[in-house]
Image (cartoon, rainbow, N blue to C red; front, side, top):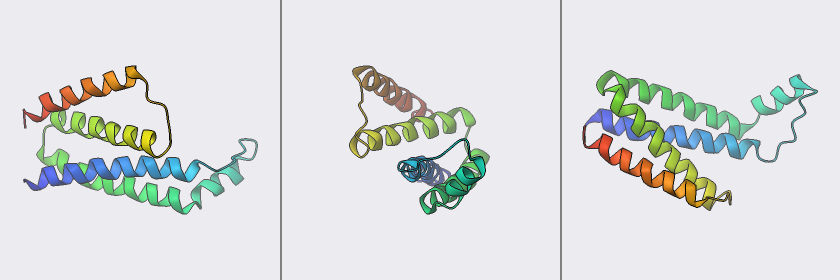
Length: 121
């Protein structure tokens, strides 16, 4: 496999993990918008949130490399759609979020789109 496609897989996994970590880091927090400094401090010092931000940084580095080698019209749809499916799966299995039939239909369409885009690589 070409290095740019390995980097794309890494970037989309890093992006999905970053989003999941931010959600996990913010789950049990009682943030008070009336005290913005305290709220920002709570967020900024949360180790799970910090790890999520690190993963966003890793995503940025890997995805920048990908964009130097792969067409944006291929990289971006793969990045967003596969990342969406990872986050959706985590949300359902680990967070217990409800997934409707409309959601599942959308996922089927996304999978079809990913297949069509990836055949152009």
